[in-house]
Image (cartoon, rainbow, N blue to C red; front, side, top):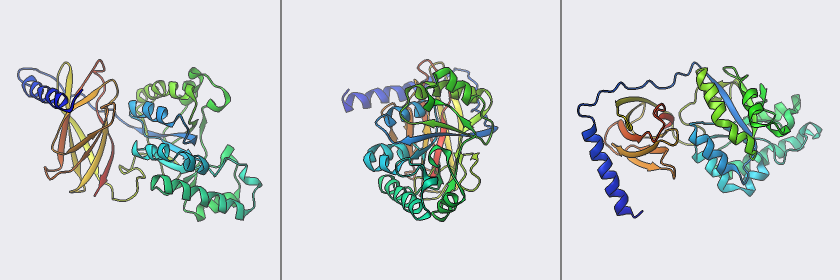
Length: 323
C-alpha cells in the first residue's frame, strides 16, 4: 500500500472514531490487575530464532529477561539489539556455557568480563544479572559476579523445555509459578514459543504479571518503567480507556515524573493501533507495539485500537523513560 493511500485510510479511520462516539454507550474496561510479578527468563540466546521468540512475547504483552552468552551476542549482534528494542532485559550467561565451577577465579573473571563487554557492545546495556550455566555455582563464582556489578539469579521453576518437554508440560510447569518467582526457559525452542500464550493466560487468570528481576534481591518485581535500555531516568505512565465501541477503543496515557519522555505501549494481537495523537509515534511492523515520544503537546497522549476479534484485551504500558 502506498504512503498516500495509508495516510488516507488513517484519516478515514480518525474521522470514523470522532463520529463513532456520538450516541454509543460503553463502559471502559479495567486494565489487568497485577497482584504479583513473576520473572520469565530465556537462556542461551540470541539465536537465529530470537526474532520469532520476540514476536510471540510482544504479541502477548510480555517483557522477559534474556540471559545471553557472550559468544552468541557477538555473533548475533542484530538479534541482541532486537531484544533490547523489544523492551526485554538482558543478562550474562557466561561466554560459551562452560562448567564454570571448574575454572580458577581468574578464568571466571575473564569469562564474565568478556561476556559483559560483548553484550554491552551489541546492545549498549551493561548486564546487572548473571545466570551460571547449568545452575552450577559456588562462593568464588558468586563473588566474581558481584565484583562485576551483577546479581546471581538461578530459578524457582524449571520448564524442562531443554529436556524435550511438550507444550502442555511446559505450560503445566509454568503454572507452578508464584509471586516473586523465576522460571527457566530457553531461546530457540519451538515448544516454548508455542506455550507462551497459554502461560500468559494462566498467569492472567491468577492476577500475576511478567516483571523484572531485581538486581538487589534476585526476585521478580514490578517493571521499573525504563527496562535496561541505558541512559535516561524513569517516569510513570498510567492508562485509561475513555471510549469503547463495538469494533475499537481509545486509550489515553498520562505521563508523570518527566516533561520529556518516551513511552512504549502494546496491544494484544490481532488488535492493531490505527490512529495516534499528541506525540511523535512509531509503530512496529505488527502495529501492536507503539513507541510514543513527547513533542510539546503536553503529557497526555492517546491512540485508537481496532479489536479485530479480540474485544477483551486492553493496551498496557511496557516502559516509560525520561529524557
